Image 1 (cartoon, rainbow, N blue to C red):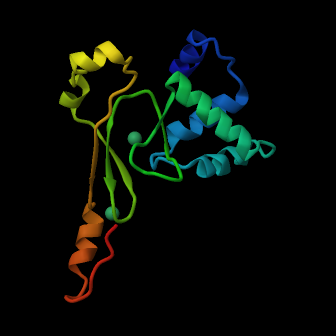
Image 2: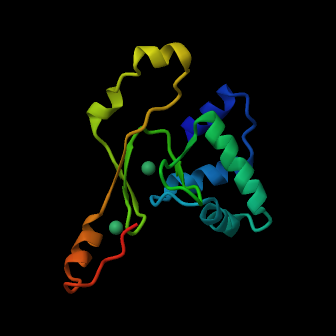
Length: 150
Ligand SMILES: [Zn+2]
Ligand SMILES: [Zn+2]
């Protein structure tokens, strides 16, 4: 939370109770919630807050780099709090997004020709596949039945 406050200040952003609360909910949820899920959590302590405010707050957090969108999940967007660099695995069957940490990925170089054209703010590594739980339940399916794959 201290880091978050420092970040807000360095970006000239006021630290409001809404921003603190939304950030805290993101930080504490491990399952990459949608805006709607964040809203449900925030509402428990701030019953008067609107989904619109939560959406706007999430956008602000994205802009200052205090939150990230989980890549590849399409709609609804899913958010990730925390300032720690990490990578994702997403299961195409159940949609679970699992965090992992692999040090070498953190030192991926931006190609020189990209550096000339763009200011890269964030690099991310993202894997897709089938999680253990889903592949185990697939094996239990009787032969001849086609497991639904997206
Ligand atoms: Zn799965
Ligand atoms: Zn994550």
